[in-house]
Image (cartoon, rainbow, N blue to C red; front, side, top):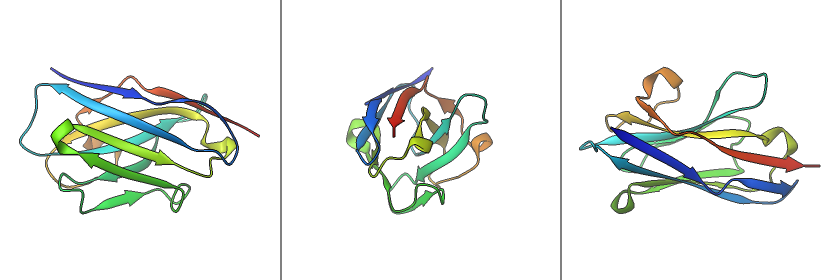
Length: 124
């Protein structure tokens, strides 16, 4: 079993910042890429950011590019999502995900394990 636990969510005013963390535990893999997705009520889950095993490759959705930064600390089996200049449209449940393999991916179906999500609410 692989478990992913997100933390750091909460409520913030528009323009504020939050940092999400996702810790991976249980069965591990030699190499794994990680990503963040989000889902607002009534909407489908959408890609936010992804990072390769080495951290050398990152991808961002257009809606968060320039505002969010994904990073990882493999010694801690943890990925982070630094969110700045938050907007009300960023309000969603944020999920971290792991895929077997080193390469970053932007498609939900490419990922193998998912966390339970953490709520981020941005008020205007």
